[in-house]
Length: 166
Image (tube, rainbow, N blue to C red; front, side):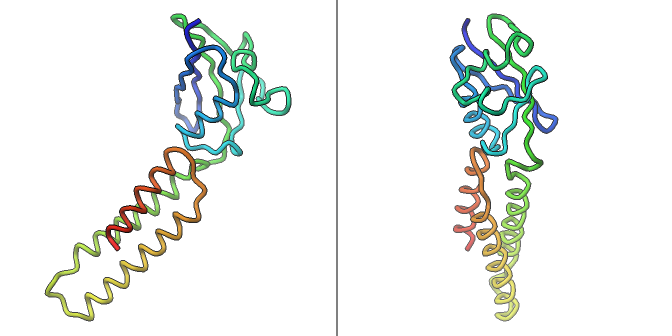
């Protein structure tokens, strides 16, 4: 057996996660989902082969192949394939909130670019105050989010962008 591939179905998308050998555990799957799909461990619930993977019977140290059993596993070209459904709340990954804040940062950037060097001082002051307010709200919103994985990296990039604009 050369490896295990887990097809994770979530929010009408299929994510394929590869594990090098058959010793991969439910804990390894949870970590991979958190890192690659940005869904926190606490929000993850898996269904496979008609069974929900929860409780002491499905601890983090249980091997994926054992958890899936024969009903949840199929072999394709020497690789064991397990299909699971990830049951997590809508926007558990925080991507919608990050996208909304990204829009605020873009709006602030656009306003900043539109401030003309020869604009009247009072008009320029008002626009700069608006930019400052938008960037402050965006930074506060990003600080309040509990993000993991890819969304955490998006947050870092936005904070760098906010710093550069402000």
